[in-house]
Image 1: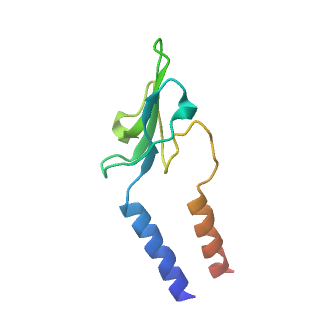
Image 2: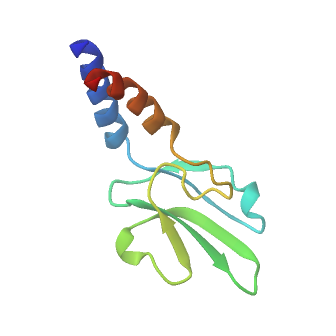
Image 3: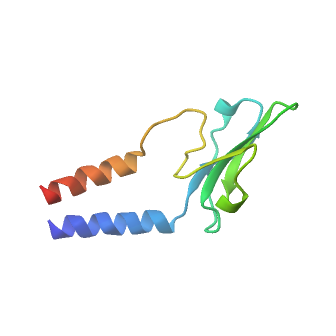
Length: 103
């Protein structure tokens, strides 16, 4: 049981070290944005920005200090998609492993 707990901790550490992943593109249709990118460590948010008048959407990595105004920022891997997926699958898997440890 302790080995499983250690594996979960290692997985969480490695996933944090790899950095945030965001959708990245410049497109006229937000749903067509399917490219992803691993953000540099300094970027802790994903963003979506719609340029009014030109009908263009830009998505990518951003720092929380620059979020605001027309730029919609979010936390979590691939959170800036056009489709809301709900809770991250990773968190669901981790919780399903950790909860039995405390029961």
